[in-house]
Length: 73
Picture 1: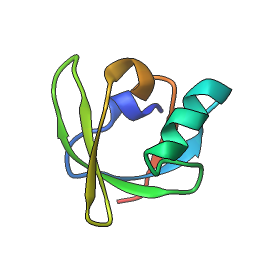
Picture 2: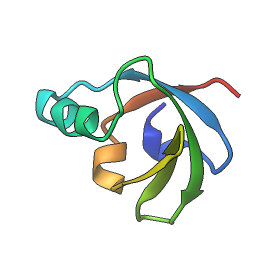
Picture 3: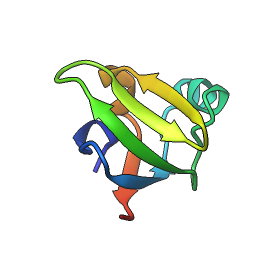
């Protein structure tokens, strides 16, 4: 499953970020393999809003399609 498939309210764990360039961008945003993050909002065909600790991050749909995740709650 990819980040683009999650729904608002779901808690996820990042499993892999296969593309090295995408991984570098994601790490800058606090997203890395093993990170547990909550989806707070999803705009159809638009950004996905993620919350980690007290920070919210908007991830574009194209980037979200490349990040593999699993639902944990």
